[in-house]
Length: 303
View 1 (cartoon, helix red, strand yellow):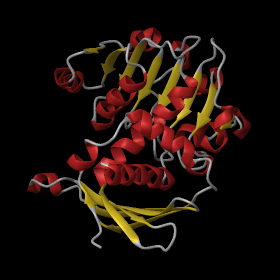
View 2 (cartoon, helix red, strand yellow):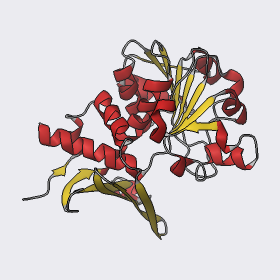
View 3 (cartoon, rainbow, N blue to C red):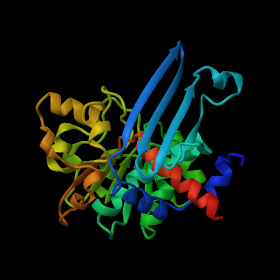
View 4 (cartoon, rainbow, N blue to C red):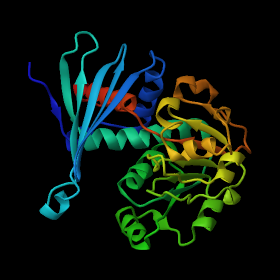
């Protein structure tokens, strides 16, 4: 039997955000994933492979090529695919478009936390960052908070204006501090190395979703924000020692490890009181690519 190759367009039409987050929650009831990353370099190009194995769900290898000079040649900078392998016998079951898995994994990861940590009656959602991830976050959060209004802020205002033209119900914020203070949920997807979200701005009852930082020198929220909040992560293994959002304040002894209350392998601990400020750090990981890829394949088979 031939192995299906699921394109972005074909997969996108089959998926829904609530179904994905339910799948991610169920995946964390299975045995803990084994994960491993490899990087190969040929300046200025990179080959990245992220692998995961979950007993009961199978295996996935997500491979990405990053060729920074491609756009000047009219080609995408990032390409890749996700290979899914059978839990029963290790045979290749599907190849899924890299961008499809990444989009749904990243925004779905954050939405799973928001469904547990944000107030269900949240009405004002601020998206910080007007890139590809920001656009996915609008779709994800709108599925779980259909009555909410959305605002976007971007360091380059023209990019926020462009996003608002694509999503007519989206308004543009000029002042980040004021926009944060007015929001019930702040979802932040930037490439910042200096915190853009200040603890002094945060209000009781808010939920803050931090996505952008992925290197040891990157963070989106300052020390004061972490100290004021109940802090959660998707995975201790992929965030604590690897991403500046938590690595920097832990190493400088602003907080200790116990300040981070739980990851998705303890979903029952994801809770809040009405006036709590909650922070979620989305670190990603190949195990989430595997869960998302399996969800996509299951929907494809059921169509």
